[in-house]
Image 1: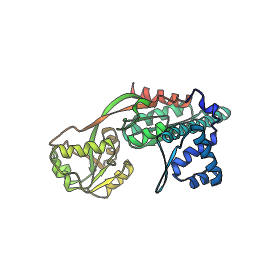
Image 2: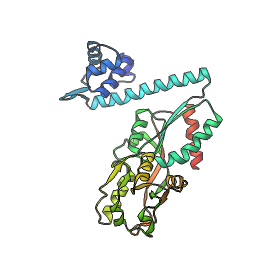
Image 3: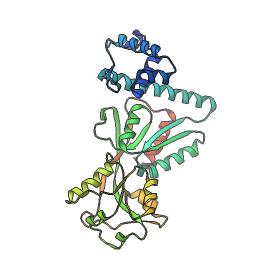
Image 4: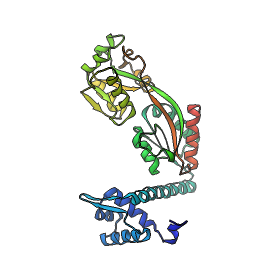
Length: 311
């Protein structure tokens, strides 16, 4: 495509909205409904897009449509443009009413309960009207939302298959994993704890695609054991905590989260494992997009997180 092709071809904002709506709905009629237009109007917009680009951008499938390689590029960029426009509106509003701006960030659990919480508290103390959103999840969904423009930056790991060339990554630290149980659990009497003995109990683990879960699965396989059979899969520490209090399950968290949960006295950490006294998960880092500058509000929060982490 030639430089400034979007201007020469008269690409419209409505075209971008249709691309994103069709990617989400995978159906032209539902996409039209989402935009509040008729299906013939949506068909006309789609035909204009294909005429501008000289080819189809969606392929028909038995259950609807999906973007082809050309469409995938356009959908990704269209989503980013629309997110930027939404953020521009928020920034303009903050300038008018003095609210201090808005920032949306993400973090895996351990940084969220430590560095992020301290940084956010400090920034909000200095800018009380600033709006901050913190999403806690596993690395894969967080990095995906970052690339979509829905998050300003994240504290996470770059997951396999992610477009690392589009990211700036500043490594922070590795995390040590701890095995938590409710007070009175039978395994608290063992020191060290044989890994095989843990298979007699239920487990609360992050979803299979998370790096923490993959490390735990590898731990059992490395020592010639079957994987735990009774597993509650959840990325939520609160759900895990509730499950521990209901029975004799074992929950795996990072050391910083364990120290927070142990404070009540109702949750205890198991002694080190006999086969592997120290279990760690690979380092996480501070990740931002190379394609999108941070807003002033997000930049303030990014610098606060860096200072908290002493980077």
